[in-house]
Amino acid sequence: MMHLEVFRTVPEATHRMADLLAAQLEERPGSVLGLATGATPIPVYREIVARVKAGRMNDWSRVTTFNLDEYVGLSGEDPHSFTAFMRLHLFEPLHLAPERTFMPPATGEELEKRVRAYDEQIHVAGGIDWQLLGIGRNGHIGFNEPGTPLDSPTHITDLTESTRVANASWFGDDAGQVPRQAVTMGLATIMRSGTIVLAAFGGNKAAALRRAFAGEITPALPASILQRHPHVFVIADEQAAALLP
Ligand code: F6R
Image (tube, rainbow, N blue to C red; front, side, top):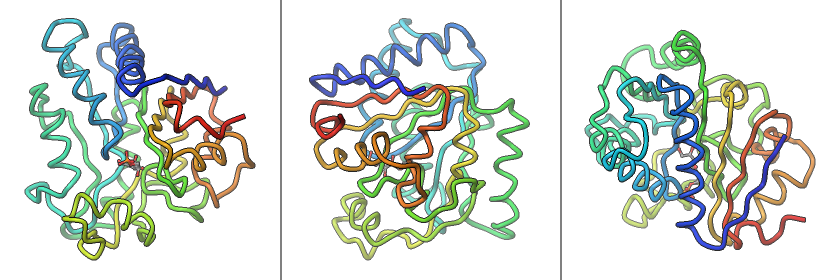
């Protein structure tokens, strides 16, 4: 079941997302959350931090988090890593205990083996209750690029040229600096989440959003698998929703 909600502005949309998360944490203070990086969640994280600090949302002391993805080869010390992004925007402001914030392994020995173990870690933590997603202009979720099998577990993936170009702004506008590979939760991993909240802001997401939710379910548009999920909220601004029927 997909619930589409369209908002006039990004701040209105981010308020709604924070409301959805607040309700989740109210019901289950020890929730396991799946988290995303990128431009889309930044205002959402800002709103969450403000609410927690003001006592308007449950504190996160019992929450466990698992992030969707990380660039292969970047350690948490690298400011371009998603680990650094999460520390900056959420983990440090909320004083989250490092042992409760999981990032996909992306460096070091026996990487493939540790990558394969990520889904098991999620399982042991109780499974993801609430998963935040953005969507790529090419329809990726996490870094499940077009062509990824719909039943994929957490895996190492080659980033497409379009994704490296889309993310170049984080690397001094030089797509050549964007790592070629990433570790990502698979589509099967994402589909096991209890509730999914996908956010899409801006006109450059409109075509992907239309193909994801008004087209056929196909590996060519990885987000289309979400049509099979029983509990998805799609939170869009008017520009991103412009091509939806
Ligand atoms: C990030 C992620 C990606 C992004 C997507 C949109 O953890 O998994 O799928 O959500 O690339 O990125 P932004 O929000 O920067 O447009």
